[in-house]
Length: 302
Image 1 (spheres, rainbow, N blue to C red):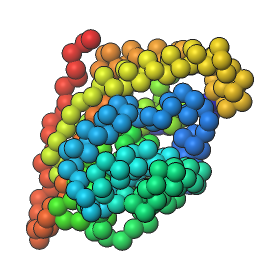
Image 2: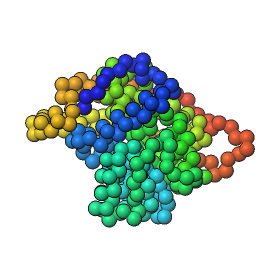
Image 3: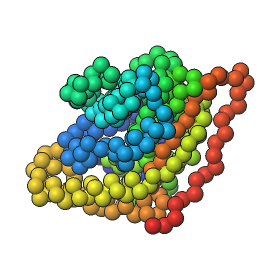
Image 4: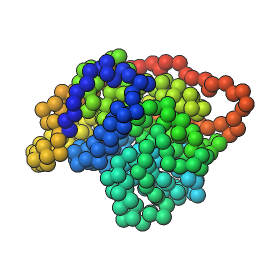
């Protein structure tokens, strides 16, 4: 996929993205993740770790039959349908892309899960749900793409019941160490250019009143996904080059970007994290800001 390049400095505007620019970024991401090229390159797993990591995350949330779960940035419905079928929960999926919403509804109908999995087009920073209705919120490989991450985290907290949990898996990055190839708009859409260190995600959640109770590193999942994309790309060059070109894949730039991403994972600049945070059962009148863990250490070289 081709996208206009922007300088690293433009991506340093973490909290100063205008509403108009933020809406443009959301629309761009939504269009990308509902496109054929993403489906061609990623298959059914749109995030590192695939359904295996989704099941692991679900285990940390301990969903029970009858619970209500929200999947934010639900895409084509893979995670929501897995949760509905495997755990007997009622799942609402919300995604910025109307095309993804339609695809997810079709998948739910085909799977016979339409009564337990509902999908809505909406904005993670303005969730279309009332306060305190969900037992759990899931957000996989998407928080890093939201222009206003603190606002999204506040929305997660708002729609959770007291004692409810949010489960996040996401790309982590040390922004000052990202090479130029990983700071473009396309890299942002690919969950890299605006990713943050794990500790910063914890701070964002804490600012929304959510206390992180579990953190795990799954950097190997990113490395495996890079390998999978590279293998798929090589096969598609031979079998479906015309489809890739029609879908807007930049075949010339892909090897350089993939090599840069692989090197960034190897040196600890890029990684993948799992976070589980909890909403207090009762908000104290003069509660203190939840404690935040110190800066994480980079993994040992592979």
